[in-house]
Length: 87
Image (tube, rainbow, N blue to C red; front, side):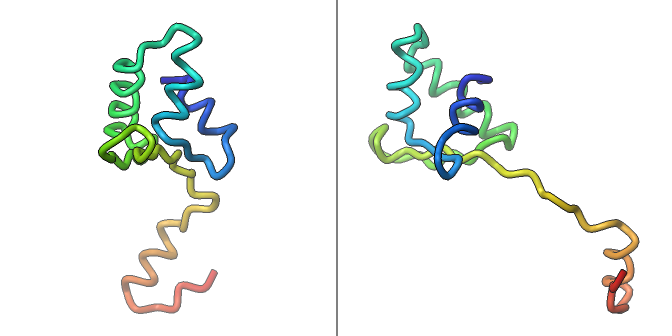
């Protein structure tokens, strides 16, 4: 799973197809069925978004990006209370 995350981090657009992941990992000794199992596990853990297609070329894996600046709780509370929420 770490190799998949590393490959996605280094890829353009932080996304790859399942075929591209297989082409990178299978020559290094990873099995295709284990790559798929790892992708599905990462999807369940909300680390990646996996859009399954009919063929490996149409399956895409996209790395989730962390939120840069989360909104503070007190600002959210002001917004919900009807205030303007300006800091």
